[in-house]
Amino acid sequence: MPQCEFNLLTPYTFSELIEPEMTDSELTELVRRNCPPPEFPTSFDRGVWQSIAVRENRKFSLVMNRFIAEHLQWLLKPVGATAIIAGTILVGASLGSLTSARQSETVLKAAYTASINPILSAHSSSPQ
Amino acid sequence: MIKALIILLAALGAGGIAFFGIRDSGLATTSLRFGHDGKSRLPELEWLRTKLDLNSEQLARVTEIHEAYRPTCEKLCMKVMASHTKIKALARPETTVSPELEEALKEHALLHVECQKAMLNHLHKTASVLTRQQAQTYLEALLPQIIELPLEPGEDAHDHP
Image: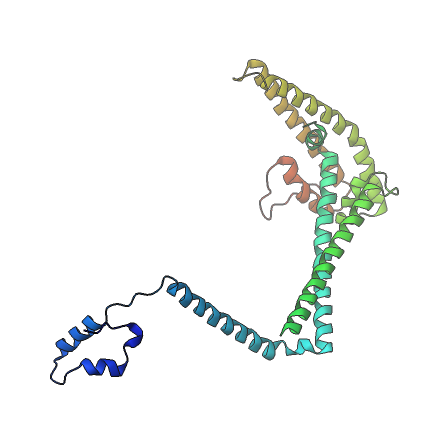
């Protein structure tokens, strides 16, 4: 009985073993005997996952390219680039100014509170 | 694609630099103004001046009250420090609460109350030279810290005419 190698199981080889009068169960048995479960190399799983990852990356890259082409194309024009840079500077400066004002108020309030609170003053004057 | 991403990252970087630059320069200005103003004798009153938008007359009265309170505050501060030293000395070698330590803790608690009383008197004296709205803002900002309890929302801290 020829041993069924995974890659030798061509329709032609297999058809030679089949007899016309075989029943379904005989056919199933033939397949079972001649095609034992294939033994995969240990690296098979890793290889499959690597292939999936490559596909996913390609997909991500394609999606990114499409997104940029559809929505960020204007960035490549001088007006668009200038506008986005000016916009982020404006937003950054506004937030910085707001944060600075809040923190300044906290610092000044803490200084006033310390100046009228003997308990706080004693804590800050005490050697650790 | 790369070029668009570079522009986007450059824009975000510029925004970040603007944020930190403005924030830090603002804080540096505050420290400078607070530390070495030279114009103000009492830089700790800067918060009051800006927060309550005091006019020159009010600022002069507040400064006067603040200066008058200073000796009391310093005296209490010295007492608190002495009390801390005493408690530390008594607590260190003991494994149990000795009668002396208990007495020192009681004295410390009484001193704490004395400090709170002095601060509350000072707050109300300062508030008395402010307008109703200013006094309310002032007391709402400071009372919770002095009484060490938060005020209930909507509670009126202002109770003087």
